[in-house]
Image 1 (tube, rainbow, N blue to C red):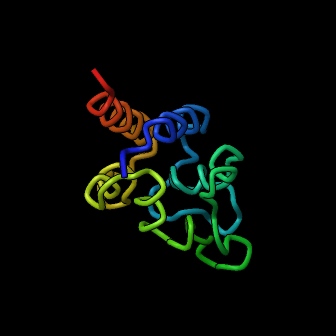
Image 2: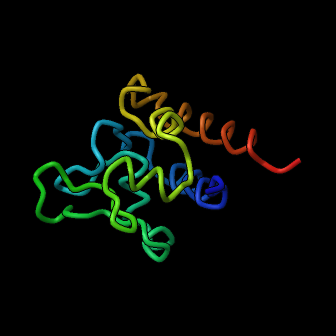
Length: 123
């Protein structure tokens, strides 16, 4: 499956519109729904929901739910939806690949996403 560049560009839009301190990469979504990782926000965005990526169990799960796409859940759903490898998923969206410093986190995420997209754009 090819990398879904359109969806990754949409992720960039979502991150750009998310307030600086509202991104935390250690959970898909806080139970209160106020702060989430990048994928958690995407899973609640209508554009992603219309295409099948959504947050499953976020209303009943104390940890805030997890992504779901065509029967896959968690990182597998992210990998399938975006057409990326497990390594790329961990690099772009994994909590352990970021120093969770809210002041810099948004800029680091945007830089990684934009670089990843640019490297895969048709020349």
